[in-house]
Each structure stands twice: as C-alpha cells, then as structure tokens.
Image 1: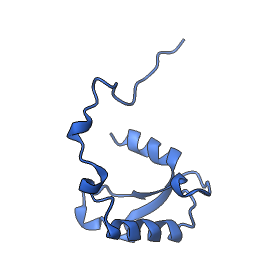
Image 2: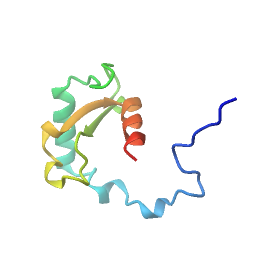
Image 3: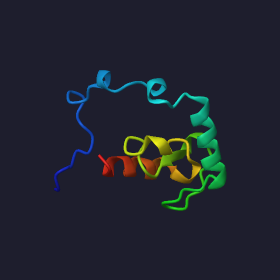
Length: 97
C-alpha cells in the first residue's frame, strides 16, 4: 500500500496564532469585496482551471494570479484575478507552498 503524503501540517505543527485573521489580511475590506465580485462576474463564475461553472456563492473563489505577497500593488487589479472553483483553488494553494 502506498504511503500517504501529508500536504498539510499536522495539528501539532500548525500554529494558528501566527497567522493573522481575515480582517487583518485585508479580506473584509470593501475594496476586496468589489474586486472579488468584478473578477467573478468577468469570468461568469466559471473556473479557469477546469471549466466548472460554480453555481453556489462559496464554490467560486477569486484568486490572485500573482500573489499579493510578491506584488502588493496588484492587489485590487482585476486583471490579476481569476475565478477558481474551491477544489482548484485548494490545489493551487498546496502547490505554491
């Protein structure tokens, strides 16, 4: 039987106190909400990676193509966003760790 590869740290390794909450990271800002909505409407709520149409609100994620950590000036630029389904967004996040 193949061994399981752990992509996410175990509960003992995770330190949630080190990660700021969503508001501190800028996700509760009205500018972010407007950026997210503009990206999702532009892409018609269709995932750019797999082509799935996201019917429910929580299925569609607005993802930054170039990470905000690398280019903070592109945080609210619609051209730096893409619509991804929750599954593809998780895969991209794990791959970029």
